[in-house]
Every structure is written in structure tokens, then in C-alpha cells.
Image (tube, rainbow, N blue to C red; front, side):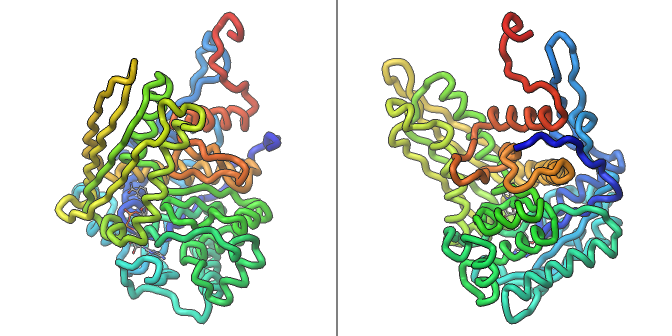
Length: 437
Ligand SMILES: NC(=O)c1ccc[n+]([C@@H]2O[C@H](COP(=O)([O-])OP(=O)(O)OC[C@H]3O[C@@H](n4cnc5c(N)ncnc54)[C@H](O)[C@@H]3O)[C@@H](O)[C@H]2O)c1
């Protein structure tokens, strides 16, 4: 990819559209507003808190990322979205039960004013939900056109200059890439003939891309991970990324597994189980939606550990992932991992991880970073899959001839080096002073 010669400055305001206004989306909106009011800190957000080392270590240059690259500011974000329920963002946030009433009251003004647009929805793709706040049309193509109209209407109403769309909707049933996803013409035809391989999330992605709006997918659905939409993204100069926000258990997996591999410790098995009681948990109780999530969570270890290079250490790993819907726990998920490793001479050891996490608290800063980086990418002239944003995903999208990078530390290095490259700074190789300074 050619380095951008210049990055257009962020002019006007930036609209953030989320298909799905549930726990993650409303926790993100509420959080941004609380930070804007000075009532809370954006913990977990690299764009807000992260620094980046530049040049030689002796130069002591480590600016904040948001001062190094021309990112949009939080004050200039304007929110909107779609949902199959008519609740305002405030009502949805109260139902999601992630934030304390004290925090919610503080942002009631803004969140109460955000009403979802009617959704493009089909229960065949999310079996456990049944909403009434939905669009009606003869074909999927007509629904996608209505989403495009919504985008234009939002832009006109709010006066925003640019937009980013992040899928924060429920996990859809598992779909494999097929013929109808192969190119834009076949995809369009499949929308017109209501082909079952076209899921609602794909309609949002198509509408965003063909409207010139960057699209990120926070769920594990296939959505934009198909040649047709990737070709359209390149044609329309639109950055794309996904899939599935890397938050709780998988985040820890991609922190621990690279460590085992770096020390050449072997792995026999990794059993992961979770309980969660939010709407996402209810949706994932359906085997079709769970399969989509399971595929996304399972790929991680194989790519990090590379059993083809280290068969003695990582051949035939037993990797299992379970998710149980357990309503009393709400959004406060609990994950357990039992890890069977082995060391010197093959002696076995065990590690137990018990993560009492908060799903949407971990996901919200990811939404924020993706919004700001995707907008930056577009202003820098980058288009198609943005692999440098793999850091944020369980199942990172990558070019067909490549394999996805899952190791959190390589992902973080790639992200920061991409920012250095964009701004014409030397890449950091971590070579010692003797060789490089
Ligand atoms: N840490 C996390 O919370 C986390 C991590 C990774 C991925 N995700 C994924 O992010 C997504 C959102 O998670 P959540 O906890 O906010 O779930 P949620 O159930 O609280 O919110 C999802 C919302 O999407 C709506 N929806 C479903 N289909 C829609 C459609 N076609 N159009 C518009 N709206 C639609 C639902 O009505 C619901 O309000 C899920 O797919 C989840 O798997 C979440």
C-alpha cells in the first residue's frame, strides 16, 4: 500500500451509526458523553489514553496518539442507530443494566434524544429475537435502499460531514461464503431475489459501503467478510474491518497463548466456559448464533500457536468453548479457563483463569477506537480491509491469500507501526542501540 501523502483534516462533525442499539452501543454512547462532561475517564481506549514512541529511545518522544495523528475529537461525535425495538438509547441502556443509575441520569438528556431508526431484520437470522420496529419491503434490495435513505436523512438532519458505521447488532446464525457473495453483481442479484445467504447485517454493510461510509463489524457474523463487499469497498474508497470485538476471554487467550509460544511451552488442551445473562447471552443460546460465535472463538489458538511449525508442542490441542445463558448474571459475564500445558521433558502443569468481567465495559472503548481510526483511515485514503485494526477483533478480517494475525502483541505493533508509517515516522524494530540506536 502506498503511504498517504497527506491526511485530510477532520472537518465538521462525525456521525456514528450503529445497527443495534443494545448493551454495547449504549454503553459506548453513554461513556463518550460522560467523558465529554468530565464525569468519567475513557479507560481502555488506546486513542484517548495511548502514547506512541517515535524515533530513537534517546530522543524521549512519546506523544499521545490522539496528538500524533489527526483524530476526530469526542466533542464532534454525533450518534444514531437502528434497532428492532423502539426504545431510546436511554431506555435501552436502562434495560441493558450495564451502567449505574448515577451515570445514566447524567447522560439522560443525550441518550433520551437518540431514537433508533426502524431495522432491517429477519428472525430467520436471529431466532431468539422478535421485534416490531422493523422495515417492510418486497426484497432485501429494497430494504438496503431504505437503509441508504436513512443514512442520507441522518446526515442531512444532523449536518455531520462524515460517517462511520459499526455493527453492534445481535449475532446472526452461521453462514458460509457462497457463490452469491463472490462479486458485487451476484450479490446485488441475490438481494433482489431474496436469497437466504444474504443476512440483514449484509444489507447494512452494503448500504454503508455504497454510501461511502466506513464499516466495522463488532459481531462474528460473516457480514462484510465476503469478496463482493470487499470489492465494493475498494471501488468506493471505503475502509472495512471486523469481526467480533475482542473483549473478555478471547482477549486473555491472545495475551497468554503468545507467552506460552515465546517460551516454547507445550499445550495439550484449553477448556473455556462462560456464563452471561444479557440479551447477547440469550441470542447465543440459539445453536445457530452460538455456532457463529464458536467459530470466531476457536480459530484463535491455532493461528497463534502454529502447530504446523511446532508439532511437538501444539499438535492435536483439545480446544473447547462453551457459553451458557444464565440470567442472574446480567452483563457481568464470568469466564473460566482450564489450561493444560507441559514443560521441560513433557511434565504437565495446569493454569486456571477466572475472569469476572463486564462485557460491554470492555467493548465500549473498542467501538470508540474503531470509529476514530476508521475515520482517520478514510481521510488518509486507505480502503478495503484494514488489517492494522486486527488488534480489536477475535476473528480479524484479512486478504484471502493471508492468514489472520491473532497475537495481541504483534497486532499492537502493527497498529502503532501503521500510525508511524501514515505520518512518515521511522518504524520501530526494537533493534538494540548498537545496531540502530
Ligand atoms: N463484549 C461484548 O459485549 C461483545 C464482544 C464481542 C462481540 N459482541 C457482539 O456485539 C453485538 C452486540 O452485543 P450487545 O451485548 O450489545 O447485544 P445486545 O443484545 O444488548 O444488543 C444487540 C441489539 O441489536 C439489535 N438487533 C438485532 N438484529 C438487528 C438488526 N438486524 N438491525 C438492528 N438491530 C438489531 C437487538 O434488538 C439488540 O438491541 C453482539 O453481536 C455481540 O455478540 C459483544
